[in-house]
Length: 384
Ligand code: 6MZ
Image (cartoon, rainbow, N blue to C red; front, top):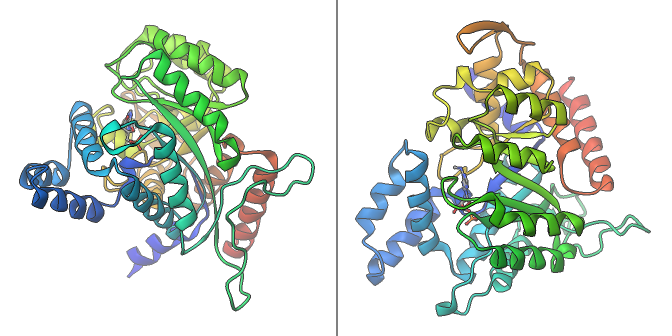
């Protein structure tokens, strides 16, 4: 009973999700249903897939094998529309008020899919969301009004609906060529009015070279897109340093940083998207107690808690907040073989952490202001 009330509290606070991969956030039940369907058609052997899907702990490399499998199941226009709708509805149901959803536009000539038609299917999914109002449009600089909103403000009975702001980030997969990465950036630029706010670099960190993606990332930045990079998921100091020197808007993970890289990161104040469950499940961090989040939080470095792949890692954003507060809520935390004083992550500190994430979003100032008001009103209601 007490546990349920506690869980309800974490679900009830407004939250900001900045690192969620669309295909990694697929509902487990949807993935199994779709895989079973393909098994019946003989496209895949369902029992093999079922085993891979239900397995709990996977190494980072096993996760990328699972993604290849997920992509066989989901790379279809109708399915993309469905999973986009479900993912947004799931985040909204746990009071995520601002979501940056990232996905890798894919081309598949066999089914007539281009990177553009892939993204159009995703946008269709955003428009299909039924349980909540979706704000996906950037603001007009003159009027401050959305330039292209699919928002419905009121229900038929006149009561205001719950609202979620969604912005899209287009991911470049590390398997891609420079030309393919450039194509993704061009597409992002064309789709800016549909809520595309930036570019992400992700994919298997042992594949590809930083130099391959740099021209596209530079071009994206010159054109005003924001950039986030998966950085330091494996030990690769040369690449980590090159990425930090690029000064991205944010980075994700930062698991294998040495002293020099921490110093550089902290002096540049680049916000870090923290994915606790993902890092622990993939064993890039050995346990939550030694996670670098503690040190960054103590150093007042900008951080934001995120899910990464809520479907693949069976987590939720509320779950990540509960995990952080139960691991770091006490006064001391064990970090790098010594106990260090932690400022104590109780409910009000966690609420402040959630609100602070507004500063690091890739949407415009009008959205930041509106989110600030949402948190303000929640703080009053929750007496924080
Ligand atoms: C790096 C990851 C990732 O784009 O098909 N992705 N890349 N590290 C991670 N940590 C575990 N989790 C997900 O979503 C799935 C794709 O996102 C990237 C991978 O490229 C994966 O194929 P989309 O929607």
